[in-house]
Length: 287
Length: 316
Image (cartoon, rainbow over all chains, first blue to last red; front, side):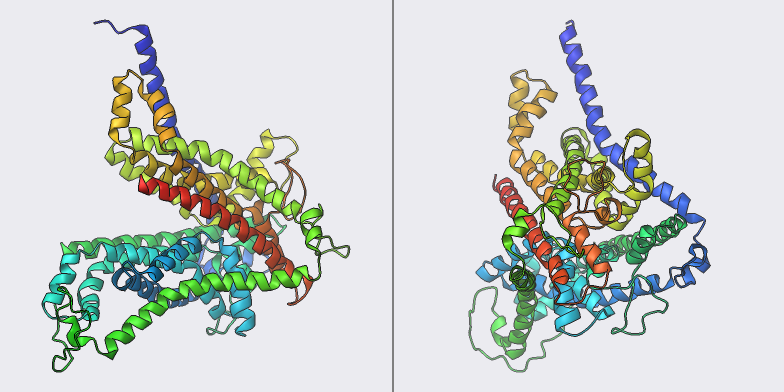
């Protein structure tokens, strides 16, 4: 049989379309790659131990990242301490207690909506609720509570997913052995779901590290000459320090911003790697 | 794995003695109940968050409109609340937001849709498992980093090709934002395309329709609910995006549709005021809540529409 020219044209067109679709995946990744590489090249000249361990300065060469780095670590630790217990608790309620209950359905719709609220609006909530009404001022605690509310929906959804993957037969077996509901959850369901919960929560916490807008609104400082001394202390974080440098009129501060971005991205990469390692470790243990 | 139950003798308070709950009765003591209440409170907290947002926005918005007429807010075309001659027309901020959002969607829609087609129709399982998480990285990069990209790299490059492009402009902020939201469009659209029954494609092939036409004229229209959901949710995300526009689009509340100009979005205005030191209770302070309420209303509407279409996909 002879392939007609029309057929050959179709083949050719199909190939072309296929490559076009493939390009739609590759081009954005390529652009991101180039932008990140460009930033790394710009920032590397400023990146040094001195940059990491110095305080900000009006002279770009001397300005450092130390208060922002420490502030970010404190803030994220505190945020995780608040958001993870509440988020996992809510997920346990939804998955283990709330089956078919109208209130649980209502909470779920509500969580889906909260996940779509722009982060800057959480900043407005934090500003009125924590900074003003609760009298916390522009403190680390107010910032952490705001971020905790922001990541709560993601923590709940991720934990819920992990709990859902635990087969019901295990629960029934546990009840059969005479365990109570809470004993079953604590000793059977939670250990099984732990890898999924850990991975999900670490990923949501790592997202909080990059959050800028809500913290600007609750009033994190952009020029800190000291390291936060406690949860009631004022603070700054890496993204805000980067924002401050980006918005300065002097060009040389852009290099500082690029160096800061390297540190920020590395921290996030580290956390994501940790999530993957933990997941693999536990997955192997349970198989 | 199980430790013996700390509860003493079995009490048969026989509440809900179902088959799976044979022993549950023994321990339906107050501690089990307390734990349930604590967990319930964790769940209920998320509702308090929603109420908190609504309350805070509503209180400040009402306070604002007791001083400024709502007709000025939706009727005036000047937004200068921080100037001596203050004007409160929100349109410049809304138009700035719409401009950057439109540019972002114009980038993200074709890329996201074609990427979804590639992942669902052409990619092997192996390539999909590599490319899908890589695309998700685009949405995971902090927005302040994208802001830096737009200002420090994209704008200078664009200035070589686009005459009259200002240092701060809607174009590069929108383009970069578009790259960021590609995965939002691609992942939901891919789900919708993958969930189509195989018979649909097979019947098309049997009828002699070629694969490309099958995708464009049969699969895509059939997956339209998912695609509409993806686009609406992406629009909502673009409207609420803050740092890219705050860094790269500028702080000038211009009523313009020229992408080469500097514009201020609603989100960027909130950031601008927050960076300064505006005293509580002043009209300037309240403007950020009014703008926030407007922003919330817009994103909430888009989310509702998006979720409605997304549910349709799941029911199919």
